[in-house]
Length: 132
Image (cartoon, rainbow, N blue to C red; front, side):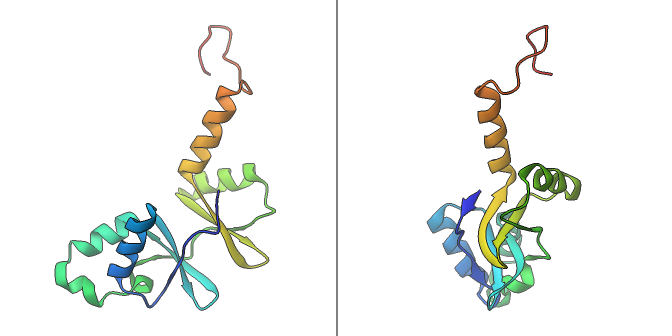
């Protein structure tokens, strides 16, 4: 999980989101309306808006983002979160602590954790030496 992720206001323009993503090397931006998490802006959403050319100058992040992101409490069990991400085909989960944005868990984070777990020998190969 990436703790304390950057976020952006729903009324911000796409150009501001592009600059923030580029400056910080990120592909996801939680979208806030006041203190409420209302959506998730993906890098692919931004690319789509950029294809509109000058028309994208009037689009706000709130209009472009994916609404109703998958939100979980920090105390939720990781296995349940990961399985639900798979069921929803969600590329990310917004992690909150007492209702406030605390982090973002992406499929990249999950793959990294799985790779480290496998490397550390938590899941040995089967009898043939193959990974199951």
